[in-house]
Length: 145
View (cartoon, rainbow, N blue to C red):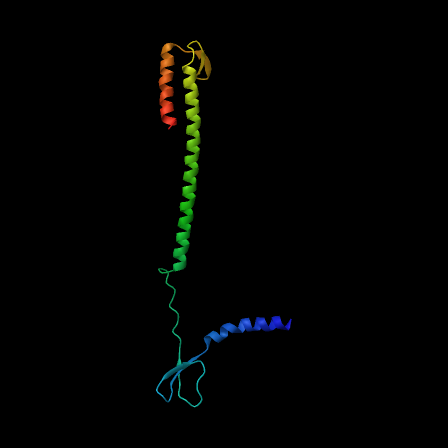
């Protein structure tokens, strides 16, 4: 228990040593010396640390990084949505292609065969058959790429 109390005390007191005074003096050889402890019997100059620069709202790298991260996340989300939309469109085009080809095969079958037109099964006249074939060819061209 005593070890933990001692460790906690050291951790609390450690930042206080960061604010120690700095001393400057010139020794007998003419060299300038900087130290945290002054020499005995020597004239010293106490050096004050320069204050940190004030935080500038225009030059905040943290805010810039956060903004860039948010922009990248938004770009990823948009790309994910675009890919999902393209996938859904591709699946729909595939289904439409298969339906158009199936309908075309029905139109190419025997002329007296029943064909589903507007939700009802009916026998097509030659003119209706040509018209439906043109529609299916357009659909095949559109959806079967």
